[in-house]
Length: 483
Image (tube, rainbow, N blue to C red; front, side, top):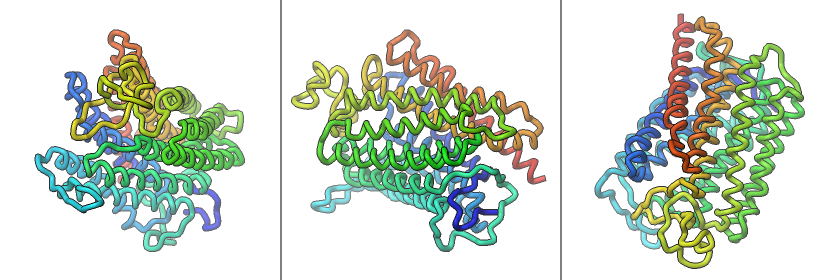
């Protein structure tokens, strides 16, 4: 069932219950929490609570980590009990995390723990539960990544491990080196996140330097891309040497980006030191996108309609991704600058003053969380460009993974439930949701009348529809398989 121990590739399968748990997480993170922020605060002219924005971003990205787990768990030869614990844990963890986070941030008087020179920490019992949820989740997910990379971890695997009734195998294989990079850089991103938590968030201090957040978020996103690119290439049948090259290029570009970010943070250089290797990562995305066109090989029996949908949204994602380097070169030129939050009318001296007369562009340091000002306005400001970079790019990653799953497993699953032509509807709507998101973000930045409308009235409904439809398809498949 599984690859040999000395194999250089990891075979891809699909654990359907685990994939459903990722959809449940996305349902909570995007339509539920995201729309609470939009309709409950943003459209009423109120600042969306910071913790709600963090919950929305964390859970949506964590759902992608669960998707990757669902693709590698079938061929890891895990013990059946371990598989069940991972699956049920993924279902339970997200709602528990949301409840605990909400409790912590709505408590009137969290306990203040003074540790002398280390600082004063705002802690609570729900906060302890949050830490347990986060650390447990990433410990398990990174362990799965290491297993996929070929690392032996005692007590988790079983040499007699077999596919369960609710798992599907495939002939698609991904180089193990992709999972080495994925596990390593995801670990660095998680460690950075915990450092931010203990040094700043729990002490109610502004994050400084602001580039620590870029180190945390970009390494996490890039780690996901290290799996996404070779996975997509293998799914369409690209030649193995091209896939191996992509994995090597990916690991190299992210390592150089990490080095550049550290130089940027500690030596306060110009942002070009990490933007340049970041552009090498963008080239990896371009290389993967170009491979989908068929010049490097296509496997037989491929659903080309789904492949075209994948090419469409991947090409759009390249545009959204390139907005990031533009922001870095024009505005985030110092490690303590960000365009995310409102800044005061007097920009102060030095690096902040250069951002614009009177700081009208809202470029500056992270604000004091005790006096949270809300995010900066988007109309004709760098914040509007940041929204165009962050949100559609994130949605595109989700869409790409879903389309890859449709490409590999979709026709077989839909035949089982008796709806083989549904794949065309799913491919179109999955690819269109991030695209309409970007139209709305662009319209809001350009200050067009009704500019964000395509996001709120088309993008959000399509995203919710995608999640519900995929959940329905997978649940129906489970019922048919159980019979």
